[in-house]
Image (tube, rainbow, N blue to C red; front, side, top):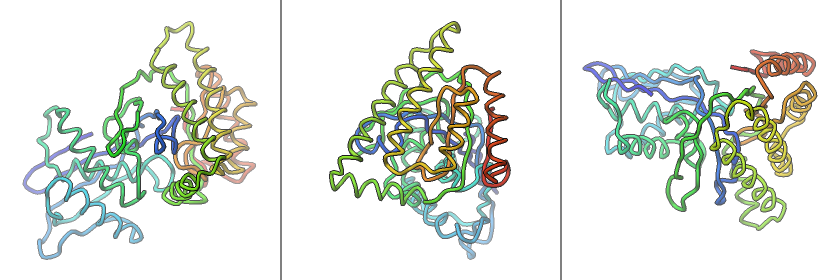
Length: 327
């Protein structure tokens, strides 16, 4: 995360995220865990005529939402809407499930806060930025959990415990050595719609949803314990298999919530047959992000090749409907 202020411009950066376990379930009292990604989104506020107000350089369809999110974030920081040109440079495709809206809100919060460049942030600074970004994220997701904006701001591997009426508590976990593959498929429904649909079913005490959420929460809790243990190298491979088994169990629960799609199920099957330990969707579901974990980096390369071949058969080539990375 970077914030720069001078007489003519300010900027801020937020990073992408990959939810590993606990998506949706954290909204109902269960833990979650995720990773911050290297891919990022940067905003730059450049000077312009005050009479023109705030001009946003982005796709026209997103302009009103970006302005509304900016207003929410500015209000949280005790500021008025800024004036000038707001430029957005993103490595995160919107709707990919990698947290582009959370990265945008974090970048806006950092940019508007005007924190001095080159100085370490205090815990109070981080909390203020997280709260502001969370306010902005409500524009896109209605009732976000706060975990996407935390991962976009803090980075690394973070475990979350929900807190009623407040942002979740977070604990930093070791993340080195996880041989992951992440990817993204076209969405069939946006995140806000999926969250609202499940909220309605939970409010109706739908037993299928209650049981599936409990199972997803159990998987998240056990995954956090495995990641927190940070075992030495000889037993890492065993941990990867255990995380893979939990991923498969969590995916089964999410499938019962109608959050999976046939293309994703096909790719997960191909990945398992090629040697992956397990995999699941990541985030809101109905398309979007997913991940698989492999025993080691050698097998990861083979799994990645098999997924790309399967994607071609599904007519979802890299750079089109599907993105894949093993980095």
